[in-house]
Image (cartoon, rainbow, N blue to C red; front, side):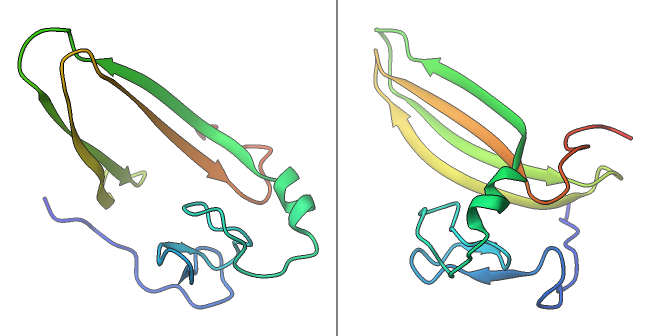
Length: 124
């Protein structure tokens, strides 16, 4: 299946992106703080006010524990985003690794919504 990606978004419009100068992650142009490295990327006198309009629309957390016997387990954490037509618009491998017997890993996914958040996470 091929991913359907949206076309380029003009600077200054919702969804426009830029590169974080610290960690090189692709972030929203409107971001004052990079969500990847947490560094400030531009001055924003209203950053505290904007934080109040941020909603965590989705948070999923799970832990995998390897039993204390057996071979090591390998894992890949894959993130996929689909639109309302069930078309995949982005897919990334977020991390890979291995767990030895007795080890555990906790994975957390959080989706933050910015702006008018009174209907965040609701299906229409």
